[in-house]
Length: 171
Image 1 (cartoon, one colour):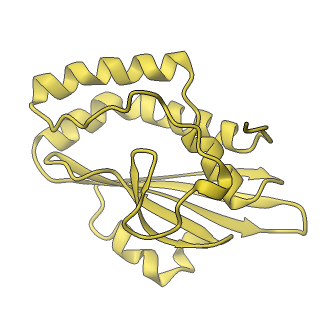
Image 2 (cartoon, rainbow, N blue to C red):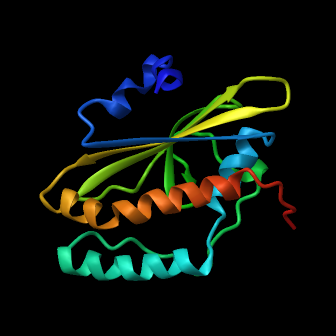
């Protein structure tokens, strides 16, 4: 959290948060490549978890978001850093090239979730990436939903981070 606390503009994302988690990983890939690798990670088991999630969405009466026909593979150069634009299923909130990238899930009635990545260069070739999630509950269904998915959330974010540090060829 120390690196994140250096950025006073991030306080808004943590104020009154009901859940915060921060995970850290090191790599020699740049910030754009790291994030695009994370957002392009869709193994079969993760797609299956999203299908199971649809059951909870129906039971809790949550907002159903439109699903894409195909899951996008985002090239680093195509990753938006412009606030208000979409990046996969996230909406960019704030970004500084090579330093950080903050996004939010689409508007919903049960919770808001902020997903951010901060790049901490610690030598010429290595960067430590701090990936955070900040959740605010908006309705009683927020903590019910999030506590059902929380174990999977940690696993999914960690696996996305592992995918983000891999160098990949995009055609």
